[in-house]
Length: 143
Image 1 (spheres, one colour):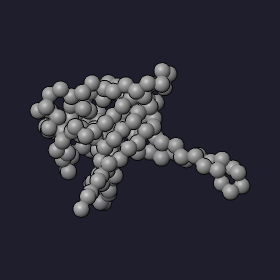
Image 2 (image 1 turned 180 degrees about the vertical axis):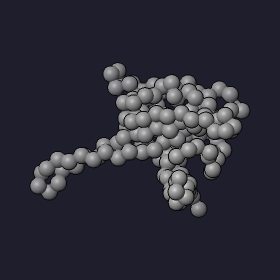
Image 3 (image 1 turned 60 degrees about the horizontal axis):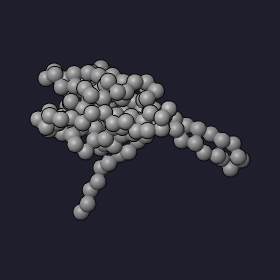
């Protein structure tokens, strides 16, 4: 049986935040906005913004943090992951994220002025990349 978990999003970056785990691994959190436009039956045009949480791990996170800022247009490919965590009151919460790690992750910066796509440098060190492929389930990142 074939199983595929792949998410593709292209939009504008809303926020960028880099953090580090207790072991020193970089974790970059991005929010990406996509717009949905439609016309209703009366001909009225509407628009809604959908925010997507994207998490980039390891060496890739270190590289990406220098390429993206609020307003940057990006194209990403990753996997969808939902993780459970507890808030300050001890209540269970769930967060669904697009995870970018390892060699299958894609993040392209789209330069709108020149209408060209720019890719951040590739991670050359295979040892650092393989560590990023193993995304921990229980990150010690404050919520």
